[in-house]
Length: 314
Image (cartoon, rainbow, N blue to C red; front, top):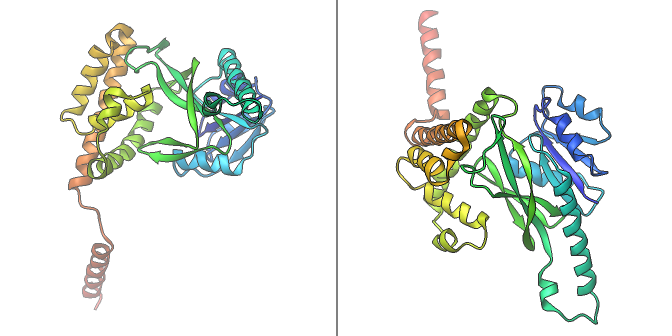
């Protein structure tokens, strides 16, 4: 069996459907980032564990969750509230876990001397998302299949921060699952999406500046990466250094990836992603050119205020 973590923050519109999709597991843990809506109340109406923890970042929240909330089972699946577990995906997760246990028994059998069996054990598996937007699967412009690490062996995988999101640190090999999961990225309305990506763009602007000064393009992964994850991350490192990023992103998504085949939702999706890219570009300029108030300047203003008050009241 598999334990399922569900990460939430103000997810009262999605949490019930998410939990119900996860009821295939007998161990569901909702990790809430101190929501101000009815998320916790709704979650508590189901037979699940609910734990609250103040959100710091996506990477830190996941690592805290794995460190301090012990699951019932050795293998865990990380689900976000706007995502859904499917019976087909759950069945494949159980299948690869059973295969992993069978390989472990063979590795520890002194009669088996097969290095391929020993090297094939995975500590995590990537799963492809199906982005759902305007009641349609946006298949082309979302780089499908676009993989995220979701199924992992507890104690073998951790997470670091990268921009507005996170990147996994695995103490072993990883694999890929065939089945996919639906991701209702705009299920709570366009205003919520814009508000969320406004926050994300601030983190991405800071990460972009950091990568421009300290990072580099991995050309080998870009052209010869062993997986979609390696190629996509190398492509992102390249895109950070391109001029006119919003226009290039729209052209790449709509024409090269084939967003034009996703109909009106595809056009809207590509436009929103170009808008998000433009927000990042503007905030990079802001970080470079707008001076931040310092403690000394604040003290000087306080001093001027005191002098002005003394002159008015001798």
